Length: 145
Image 1 (cartoon, rainbow, N blue to C red):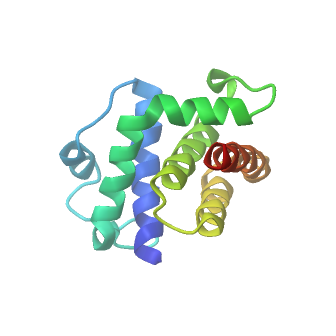
Image 2 (image 1 turned 90 degrees about the horizontal axis):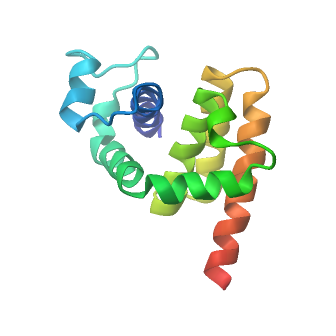
């Protein structure tokens, strides 16, 4: 689980750079930008679960329009460009993970809220939780319909 958390943090950092620059990096560029060490600030080794990080990153790059559409539909009165950059990135990451079905829904939601709590503003965890609830409702509706 710790390796996956570190991988999520790495992908979140790449997403944040994309949100700021508008340019996707190659997986090799992402690794190089983190330096020779794969350990993050908490001492977690993201490379222990590199296939997971690669799957998330691929899902994000291939399905970004679908992901943003789900987020926008679930966020009442918030346009994507008006969201805090970090909140938007956490939402993108969690939605990609929900679509890829890489972990149980509860785990994905808890991890997203933790990322928002760790890196976002005081209001970020509640905002992320609320929007992801709407994303889940939309995904459940699509599966039933």
